[in-house]
Length: 212
Image (cartoon, rainbow, N blue to C red; front, side):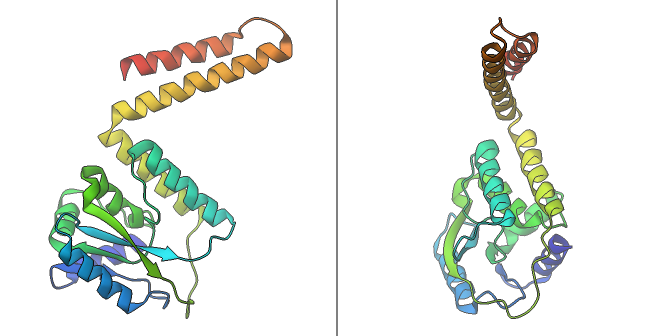
């Protein structure tokens, strides 16, 4: 899979810093050199993500990407513009430590998994820099809806593993809000008192918040 290929390449690479690039000809070698120079000068950063500079076209794929960005910010407090970019530079000793101590996903979710882990540890570890994108010379994207679900699962896995209290508070708060909205709508439609379902779920949400 995608993650297995990048992981093997990084571990076999020589030097202190490794750069990953897509093989379809969209990336510019000059951008890779620029990322290496920036990473060499920035002593706090251990990874740089090359943010793709291209017009946003409304499609299911862009909407899925936007949903992943919202999920990262909502659950982890991480605000990446392009965590799934194929061009990244990372300091190899840091990556080797991650690969040795954590389970690395071998599917497409790998692309965002490493920067998320690093950024959760310290937001200064990962920075983003604009790169240019050229026309694809060959190949096509193989990202599927299943890859989106896997990526979403990884975000939730990281958040529940590292921030269980935060996840509990967010889940409980949203459950209370949705229950209140539901109860208000039902009361308005039926012109009656508080529905039992709304009362039960509001109580459950409050319990989750209380014990988080």
